[in-house]
Length: 166
Image (cartoon, rainbow, N blue to C red; front, side):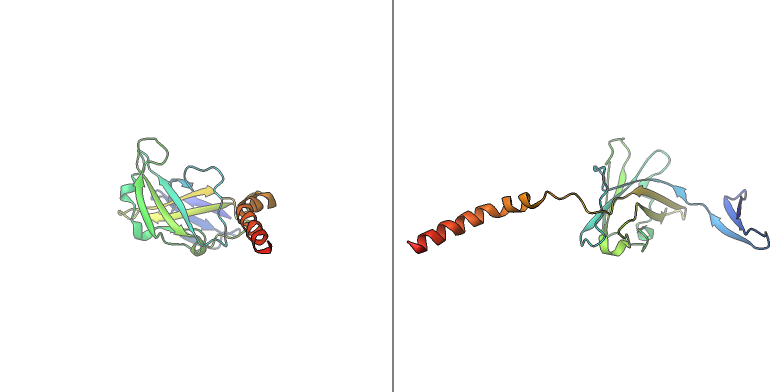
């Protein structure tokens, strides 16, 4: 397999025998991405029913105000955002675009280690950004944690049973 680039930033694919040539198009502009901004683990429960916040990080080279929101897609299934807002999540002075995607619609599966957002600017320029994800079960606190939550109710029930027996 060979790839060649043209002056127009298109890339060509050649198979091993060089008897087939296909123009695949322009490479997408790489953008910085932060899944679950503010956290390091980027945990996503593939069976979860919540939302996954994803920040496209703005910079001098990439203005998030030019993102065509209708063209955003996240994960293998290309989930569309249900909400978005512009905010500086990393404190660099540039606005970042934070979009929220329904977990079930992303197509992220257990064992996945990378998730990507694709999109276009309002000028038709394609872009893509990826970030590491953790789809393994989060650490649990063990049975002690669950008992600590139930202990007040169990103590109340115990007192009530003692009163009815007396």
